[in-house]
Image (cartoon, rainbow, N blue to C red):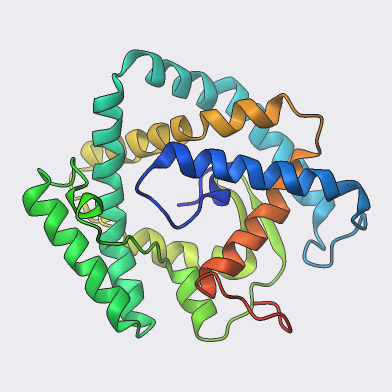
Length: 249
């Protein structure tokens, strides 16, 4: 699930969240230096006026609810426990990543993800410990939007979704499949399922706090930064970091 704006700048490397976040902030800062030189109207963002309105709404919700909760979570919960929570949810996501790797016919990637899930589930206390990363087994983040892109579906216009944050038309269409394909949605006990979603949301927002602090102190157009970094990251995801120069996907 794509949560708020800056989450989408995260790289494929899931082993060390703090490094990923700081790297994302560095990328955003570099893009911000060039923002004034870019045309006001981005062809990938034909609904910019609407999207900016949603972006402002998301900011209000984030300032009022999500950020304070994330700060409290970071303050109260010890780092070791927060890492365990992150690892647990990453392990659940790896199961859906495996399914998408199979749908993309990526044999080696599927095998690595399958091994990650088994190693972390059985030797990592149900995923609380990321034993697979320590063993050098690479994590591959895959979702159904990437699967559609793999088989030729273009991204379509950029879309800012309420609460969920940046997306594209292709990724928005893929969201229901990602939702029902995730393990949490298949938990039968509704209170437990809702608790897992809430915990995942808080954990994801807490991981963004280092980048959030950097960007809030910078005199930048955060909407433009969020959009440009997100679109570039998604393009890199679809093409495994090697996007073609002559077409947009």
